[in-house]
Length: 215
Image 1 (cartoon, rainbow, N blue to C red):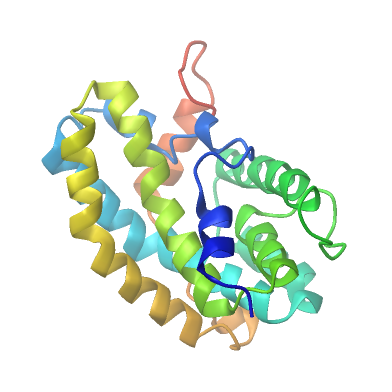
Image 2 (cartoon, one colour; image 1 turned 135 degrees about the vertical axis):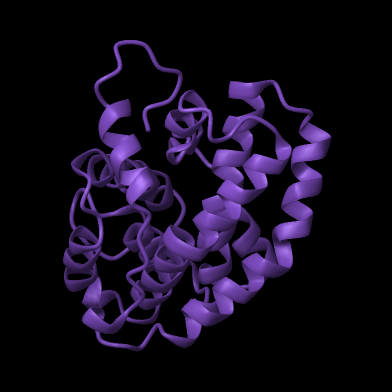
């Protein structure tokens, strides 16, 4: 089993996997006025953890536990992602993540453009991490990406944003633990929590002529 340093490497926002180009739906919510300060960002991030965070962590953990299931897991994520724009963004990030991961480890062949959580799980397996470890990385990434985007979109105090992330860390751990406990479930039984406002926002965002983030 790989150690903490390997987990930190996989979860590092500086990993060249293209995550900096995505706001995880935040840009559309900022435009709609739903996120405008640290408090409203906190509500957004808690919602992300309870929905896409749980789903991403469970699918990453499942892929890490058994990479032979990656094709079925990828189909399962397609079924849980009604927005074509979000499916496109997830696959773009999965492709970029695989490219970065294959420079570091011998990653199993899971296709050219998997969903990001499936790619993350496959990389974790190649790195010797456990489903529980990669679930933490997936849940963590669900909130740190949009938190970083919020600083750029709203000019928020980065110290206040990181204090918010610190307060959410125990929630992140609980979500990851729940997800990891479900990693052996059949694909159809894995978490499927959704956020319709994010789906709608993603479709609107994809039509914008000018935007700071890809999603």
